Image 1 (cartoon, helix red, strand yellow):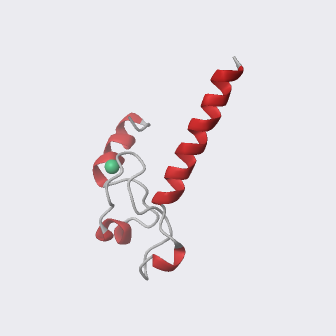
Image 2 (cartoon, rainbow, N blue to C red):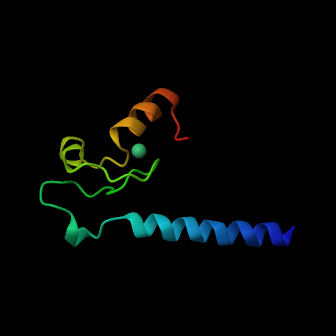
Length: 75
Ligand SMILES: [Zn+2]
């Protein structure tokens, strides 16, 4: 049982490190864009700058946001 928990904690740390690595440092965020995500949290693609300007703080690409709006979850 302890092994499973240890493995889960290692995986959680890996996911957290990967998520932190995908975020854009504040100094690199172009002017006029709210601090949010650079890459889609659902599929990992680079979110176009036009979308970041249009939807302040967007963390999903347009396609994933549409799916999230319908399903209420990321797949
Ligand atoms: Zn996406």
